[in-house]
Length: 548
Image 1 (cartoon, helix red, strand yellow):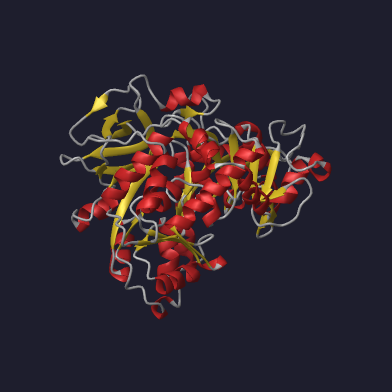
Image 2 (spheres, helix red, strand yellow):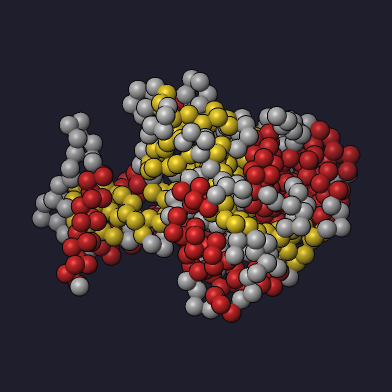
């Protein structure tokens, strides 16, 4: 099996020359269109501007923005000069932003000013009050000692910052030869991306991925998904996740396809983009497809151009897959992956409908799947259920500054432990049965219960908290917090939700709050969350029966 050992920058340069006059990026919101030639000019100018700012090989540069052509260009620009792009979730609020910037040791932050009511710049100004009096490029912050440069992507004028136009203007001061020299120093096994992913212990873990892993996974996955140069992808998945960038935008660009970029998912706008731009590929998480299918104006849009796509991010019922295929008239494939190894298993267009609806397919080339006993680690066979482990060439380099977590996830055989319960049928198809790890997947976002529990327990009236995921038709799972109050204390659900929303991203706020006297625990004192889940579902069922 052939794997390329080129860097992302070198490979992308080749493709931009090969597809020079083809349309690469379309951004309807900004009325922007880029050919592959223009796209290359954009990312090379950004790369030169970053070099002029003093960004060096191995430096960490953070990106906080909704989807845009600049986002993709910044990714390639960073890769060309050997910088490491730290991808930040736009749902993060101040405390989470501060943690990621400090933990990643980012020297440069490229950011949009705000999204909805979340002002990223105001949050940064509170974290770094020194920004208001600093000259651009000379930030010296007590809270974030590594951060020197702040670049505003929406060209607003802010004290202590550069605009993206400033950076593009700096490109004239850097020669092509200097850029090439920087690019030649980059190796395919160098780290190029850090993605923060929720873990069972609370704080998000920083997954390090190198050029080889991202480029080859995008190529192999794209082949399995059937992307061609004739395709037009509607990108509505966030670029700060691997399914948005690696498996959608980047994978399509590598075959000369066009990427139609939505800043974020908005139900009816997505349907309009498909009709206007004649998109052929639609990738999403179950929640996105459900919202589009249930849109009251669904039948008003011409969606006949859609032919294929994938669904990923959380478990999907066979009924939903069948409904999507039937209503969109498409061949929907199932993709299973994790940030730690990107795409792992995929169904194929040639698979039977029943296979595509009930399994996550076979491991892609470069991966061998194993099932092991979660307790003993012994390998299991003959369709036995156990933990899904992967021997993969697309393995992360580990969690940044977290060797303990890395050792727990990657064993001595270099197998990745997914934390998912699964079985493998005689034909090598993987069926996911559930999760071993304590993670909630809400609308495609991985959420660590421990993080929410810690925030709830900050409240003086709270004795103990246990957070679980419970089934939800639209979001896949919703967050439910069981709370034990201290003796003679009272606390409303609204106060709990407000406190969580002030400390964590909005998507981490519990929808359901249940007050309890005690929690079921094991002999070692561990909360038995599966019993709390059964208790909640039983109460919900009784309420439905009462209503009837």
